[in-house]
Length: 386
Image (tube, rainbow, N blue to C red; front, side, top):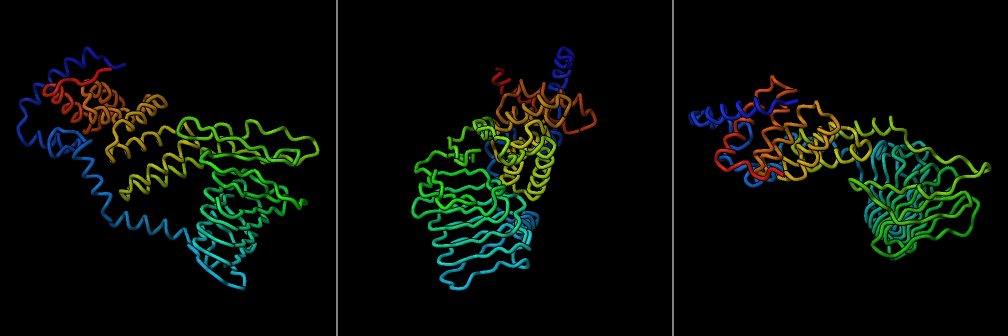
């Protein structure tokens, strides 16, 4: 544990040293904390600087955006009598967005592999989906009179804001029927194998619903309940138990699979962060956290994103969670100290910096942070100590 009596003596000495520092040392301290314009903390000037930086298109950011766009293809066709066959060369191993298409039929052959399929703002479109989808995810939004014939497994289908014409999903194989998330889609229809009449469970309104197929062949629908970090907590909680004659339901991902997925999202977040795309990086880190809530590195990384975008309250929450999960992780304590400093809670920031110093004594940035926090305590007081 940190010896706070000894720390008090150290703090007094540091404060005396800070008073004796010349202008060059003061400038060095400011730069260590990103306070080049004086001791005013990141929430104001620094946040504006970071937003201005994000608005620019640095070379790394441009490379990152180009890489993301290379993973996606947008298709738009209208009034075409012959089916549009989507080729491997055109869309292989990419996410496909059918955007603004009307009066057309698409065929995705078996030899094709997609990442995801999105159907956006389409009218009178038929889709024959014979290909494999890596994420097993299909989304339809702001569309009408759309028919999707699924010949493979799609575990998650999302349908949002399709309030005009019907959205019909037709399954060819019983094992391919997945979970439906839907909002304001009153004409959502699902045709199961061997059935002529579609199941209709769509509703109008702003509440997001989830529908799952029970062993009796009927869909059970309920409102989505979200817990911490907006993650659905009731999915499958009331799904009836399958009988011995029913095919075994698809097993949810194991904890190890979720961790591996979370690590991959954290890696994508790191790539976005290096490209100075802090908002996109935060999105990736959030996906990582939603799939593995004890991944302390993702909490620390997202805290840094919030610091970069001038959101110290959120940064403090994430950094605190990081220190709870990994009490010996120096960066978690340092970012907690930075968040407290940005909130002008200087008296609370110093112990956090001292914890970081305990676990990373060779990091020269930490003593500089302690020194600056001590200086701010002298000039402005310790701030909120609650």
